[in-house]
Length: 150
Image (cartoon, rainbow, N blue to C red; front, side):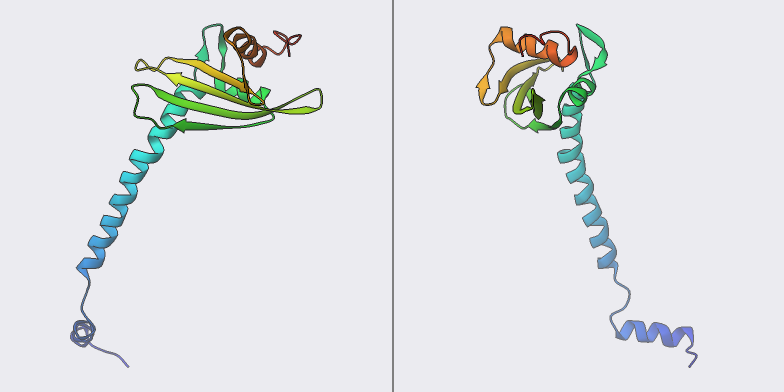
C-alpha cells in the first residue's frame, strides 16, 4: 500500500511527531559523558604517566614504567586523590625472590613542579628506611645492584 508523503506526515503527527527532545537528550548525555572522561579519566592517567613515562637522574635510559614492568611479576598503578598541594601515585606489585612471593607497595609523591620522589616503600607490610629504599630502587633499575641485600 503506497502512501503519499502527506499521509506519512499526518500519521507521524498523530503518533507524536518528530522528537526534538530526543536529539537534545542524546546531545546532553554525550556532553555529560565527555565531561566525566575529561575530569575523571584523563587526569588520573596524566598523573600516572608523569611517573611511569619518566626517567630517574641515575638511570636516564630507562623509564620508570619499563623498569617496574621488567622487575615485578605483576603490578598496578593507582592515582591517590587528595586535597593536598601535591599528587600521589601508588604502585602495588608482586615480586618472587627465591621462590617466595613478596607484596611491595611504593608510594610516590609529585610536587607542584611535577618532579617526583619515592616517598615510602613497603615490603610485606614493613616499611623500608631511606637507605634500604634507595637500595631497593637500585635493585629495580639494575638487577645486579643491591642483589646481595635482597
